[in-house]
Image (spheres, rainbow, N blue to C red):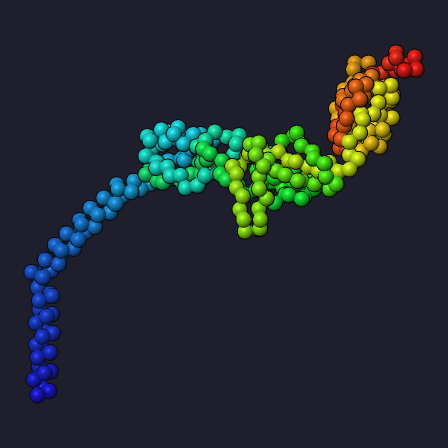
Length: 281
């Protein structure tokens, strides 16, 4: 039995050897290799043409352009633009391109997708921070950090907690203070808010007289009344401001105007002591 199996394998290998070494097999094998080589050449040539191997363009800087203009510019270069994000800057026009990926001057192939971040057409809603009961200076910094603007005209209200924010107004209406940290109060970013602040007891006074004083004397008096020095306007005669005299001020002391602590006083100075001061007025 074993001999029969061994003889069968022997005949099989001998006949297989004759077949592989025959001219018919070698001819067909060479022909098959030729067909395979031609097919591989055609496939790689097609891929080379399809992917435009070795061809690329320099991606221009699209930042600062409008999305519509950038689309027109990229049409001839077969570049697809996709907006994936938006930010808001009030000083930029809507749909202005802010960022792009790939970055400018990158080498890309045609039909490449470029992803853009554009300026939003409307301001996004932003949380109003809880500034009720906070110091005025701190409240201003916090609001500006969130992207809000603060009305220069502060509204004052009698209250002993001086310089404390009592109310916040938006578009002429009072905003309700959030009842808890989980309560969200949102208004458009960039909106102007008006603050109502406690003026405190004894925070108002009659405007002091600064006319006829030297600039240094006027500064000392302003600071002594807890007021702020506003604009200092010197005329053409002033060479040394330390030796100049105040000839005009705003608010005007002669009308008996009321001013609050912390408000500015503007003064005008000249080199010589005003004539009415020489006469003892």
